[in-house]
Image (tube, rainbow, N blue to C red; front, side, top):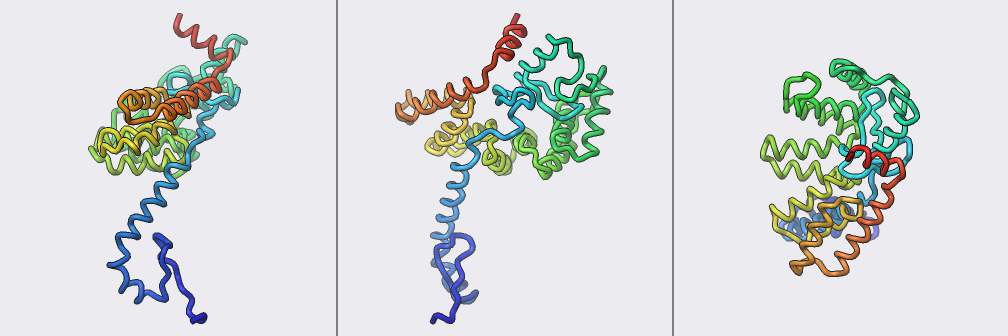
Length: 278
């Protein structure tokens, strides 16, 4: 009857019901199809989102994406919680600037000064600062005693405040400290869908080495390779040589990777890299 308003199954939205009793009667028959459709919807989101790097991956001075891995090509400034690329850092030094290239604050002289600066920003609920303090506890830096539970608590807070990096760190902690791969994958999935390259690569490794589902692994590696992840390109190359990836897929990954690397280049960065190698 037109008077009866049908409601979709809230999970799969494939079937309509006239009421809760009708849905309960049909549940056993519908359950498997519903789960399959939900998995398809989740995969659609997983593989179509997070193809662009997030704002925090770009140097706030030159506005270029920072080369990967970022900790090898940039410096985190505890005064302003900005990650400055090596090119802009060395360019500032060449001009005689001794403080932070972004906010001009004098650089801290000791671990105690670094810790005091970062704690000020932690009190202001700065997610990048909270993530940094979590890493400091995890590594036992800045005179802090190593405390993984403290790190997890800080990363959880940072993630709730929007830190994608903290989501990745939570995933790593659950693998290395708690042997909980399933929970790690949940954190990496959230981060990857927001453009976190390392988390996307980690999902590919999970599918490669844990589930042995190389089709799914390849899909993840294709995304992270085109965002500039060199290990992902190497994995796809091995897939191609092993007959798992096609020549077209390998070419797509390689060209995408080369485009991403080209986008990260600058004269200042090349100069900084040469100086660090000398």
